[in-house]
Length: 231
Image (cartoon, rainbow, N blue to C red; front, side):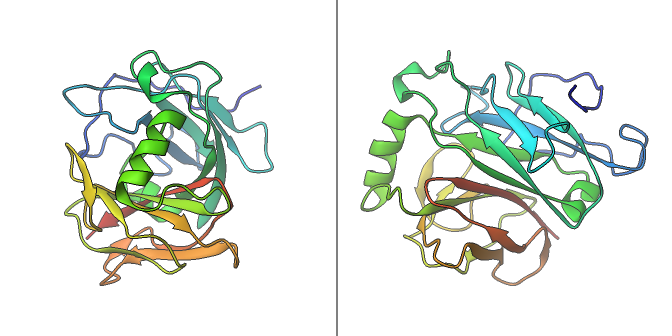
């Protein structure tokens, strides 16, 4: 049986959101953390919104804590309070109904849920990329996608600042709310072809002034997702 919190969800997505998640301990999950957010297509915008339907999120090592995304990509989980919880994310088996030209979602990964970010009231936002789109996208910004390496994907809430990731990687790519381009200060910042030899990377704002940074796991041919909240 899934252990999820019951809350009405609305179909909305914004690259720069105002908090709509209740703070930890407000009763939605008792004394546990209420972790909610969205999985959307790589190229989704407010004008052409595309949620990812049927992605599975499950707390690593605990099958009782899982949820499957709604048609708008929204999910919700109750988490035991911990500084950091790793949640496995599996792509849906069905192709996207709103971005079929992008190909099937094939890259799975890990969502890093941190108690401090949840307590801030911010909503986790992550993106999946279709296989066809991935081939052209990463070639556009570098040498392509190396399946022996990882992708670190950072969602930034608040005023974007420079994001850094310690493990060796290709030049970072940013999403400014409407388009992707080279850079490290967007609403989303992606570090492609991240080295996995140590199994971790340390991610934070360059000035270390924010919530949610820290050392996170990385694995070959997977995306590590995390949120940073600017202060």
